[in-house]
Every structure is written in C-alpha cells, then in structure tokens.
Image 1 (cartoon, helix red, strand yellow):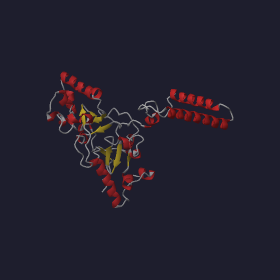
Image 2 (cartoon, rainbow, N blue to C red; image 1 turned 90 degrees about the vertical axis):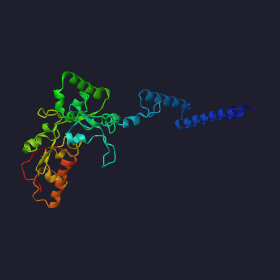
Image 3 (cartoon, rainbow, N blue to C red; image 1 turned 120 degrees about the vertical axis):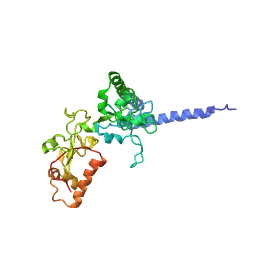
Image 4 (cartoon, rainbow, N blue to C red; image 1 turned 135 degrees about the vertical axis):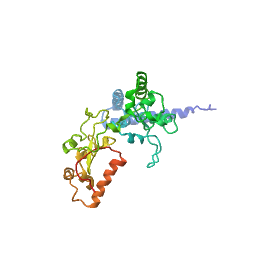
Length: 318
C-alpha cells in the first residue's frame, strides 16, 4: 500500500537516474565542444561567478523581488509644467466643474496671496459640492485668513496686504499647510488686472524682442509674476503668452520661434519659414490668409485668454 502524497520508490529512483543521466550527457556535450575533460564543472563555475557579479552590481534585469530594474529606469517621472502666470479670468476656469468641450472634470486651482495651488487632491473640500467650493478658481487668501466667505474678499490679492498681524499669521499658516503639509503643487502666480501692462501702450520691435522666451528669471519690473513675460505680436496686438503658453513658446518650446516677434505673416501662412518670420507685412496676402490670421488672434485673446499688453502701432489686420 502506498501512502497518499508519497511517490513510489521506483518512480523516485527513476527521477534521480534521469537527472543523473542528463547531467552526464551535458558533461559529455561540454567535453566534446571544448575538447577538455570535465569542462562542465568549469562552465558551471563561470556561470555562477557571472550571476553573482551581476547581482552584486545590481545589473540583473530582474531582482529577487520580481521587479525589473530596467523597466523602472525606463519609467520616467512625469515632468511638471513650468511655472506660469494667471489672469483672474483664466483662474476662474479651474473650478473643478465638467469641461463642456471634453466632458471631463477640470482641475481645481485656487490662489492664496497670489500663489496658485492645484488642490485637485482636495476636490471633496474645494470642488463642486464641497464646503469650500466657493474658493475654487478664485484668489481666497484674505478669506481663508479671516475664515470668511464674504465675496468681497475674493479675487482681491491686495486685501492680503491690509490684514492685521493675527490674520497675517493665519494666512502664512494656510500657505505652509498647502505647500508643505498637503503638498499641493504650485502652478504659478496670479497677476491682478491692475498689475498688467496697459493694452494701449505702443511696443517697439526692440522691446518686443526682449521677451523671446529665453529669459528665465522674472524681471524686477514685473512684480508678482511667476514666469518671465513672453511676447508674441499678431495683427496690431502684443500678447503675453507666459499666461499659459510657456511650454509652447518658452525656451526650447515648439513655437519659440514666434516669441519676441511680430509673426502676423507667419501665422497667416501657417509658416515657420525664416523669411515669413522676419517679414511682418501682410498687405499682399489674400482674404483667406487674413482670415487665418484673425482666427489666430481670436484664439489667443478669447480661447487662450492671453492678455493684450500693448500695440505694435500699425493698422489692425482686416
């Protein structure tokens, strides 16, 4: 009678004999290849040594825990967007509601004393239906500091400057809580409308060329900015595309060629040709091309919300 779970003796012997026979055959094969008797032992030693070296130097593709070092190295961390500037109108977009164009929930941003945080991880508090939803897409520093929901305190960065000592301390506590305790990502800075350059000022080509996306540090005259201005001229208007367009028009961006230039002709012709980038004249273009230019201007001003920070001193494209 054979007990359950135990292999018959003859079967175990056959297994051992089979393995022994296979080892002998492998040894004969190695001896035949190398011409050296007993070479299989040396081969086994080489293999063990090589595996040990790889293990010690962390070079094995798969480690003991089953993770692949090679795969881990290939999985690069997501690179965050560079800091940007926000207008009051742009910030209002990020209120956590459903985007009608994409049917997806928008991120939840809010500004505290001009610093814009992505509080999407706190959507239950700041998103639609949350107890602090009124702060979504708004400047709310003074409101948080005074624990008030008064609409008059929203979207007013200057109100933070008028707080008393106790409220200023509370404001600082909120800033530290968001940045260091909740670790909400900082997206950039909110620039109030009264801090933006006048849209009626005339900007020379020399001034336009200074803001070509290569400047990384914010110039001193642009107090409260989170990113250096990047100017793009189109038609008779100059747009500051640092308000959301830094990845595209900033340093090494795909459209940096447009930064610091009047690119009316290039936009109208949908061209990167250096000749079109340097030529600002659109008087010889047909109506369909002028319409393309005006569509771009509308996209910059209405869809993107880039602020107009000056004029080029020429007639608007019709």
